[in-house]
Image 1 (cartoon, rainbow, N blue to C red):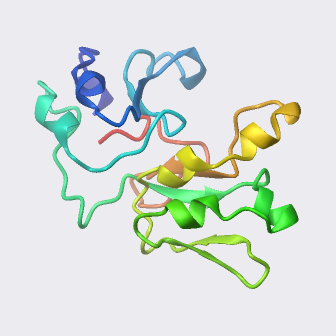
Image 2 (image 1 turned 90 degrees about the vertical axis):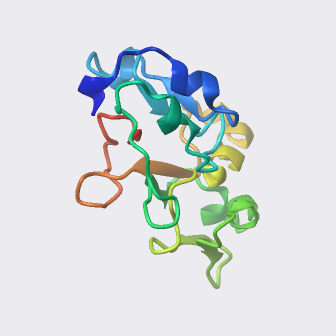
Length: 161
């Protein structure tokens, strides 16, 4: 679908939560200036306005009840993995897709997670551990690949549908 993108920026302009960003050089030349999901800046509330304003159909309309845009994954920078002291992602998840195990560590239920990114946006891991460098949060949402699994490397479309 990225071949249909005109890079008109309408989707980003209409996004009231700020989750739609612009692909840069780090994402690759094919993704530059195309819309990408940036969960550091916001989360998706599935309002579907991005699909409504897309003039070419590069972002297609979808059913937020049945379709997912990504899947959350706990990373090695998760504060709760070492200290069991953080429950931010579990508290923020509007779909109850994140629960805590017996050691108070987050566990993502792939059946309930739809990739909204609220957990990644709220995660304090890279704030409290800024001395380590990097931007990886304790939980990240990876775009879904064509097979329906969260792709370890991300999706060249940047998660947009």
